[in-house]
Length: 133
Image (tube, rainbow, N blue to C red; front, side, top):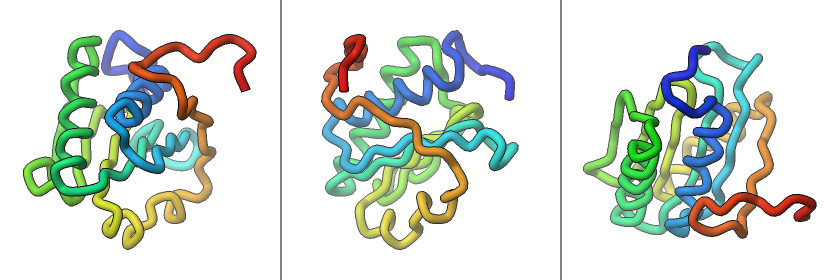
């Protein structure tokens, strides 16, 4: 897929996942969908703890990526805060209320996709130190 920003798709998706973690999103997962589907290259899946938290995480991802030259192309569900879908074309960010995440089970639905490891401890988008476990 063509890159829609200054960042390659993998780096932008990883950054989106880190931004979700920075706002204390739960169970953040990055799925590599290349070779599984042509609709997008990556899914970022995260959970908020409430409708307000879901909205806050989604708004944070949108705002911070925009500062880095990565514009969202389509947004759904942000106002309701139950399931925010942020379509960046090369990757899609899903921020769920926990009950909806367990109902839709995207990770199970896309179980053929490879899970990309994330540094769950890095803060504010800090780079992962070389040789870190």
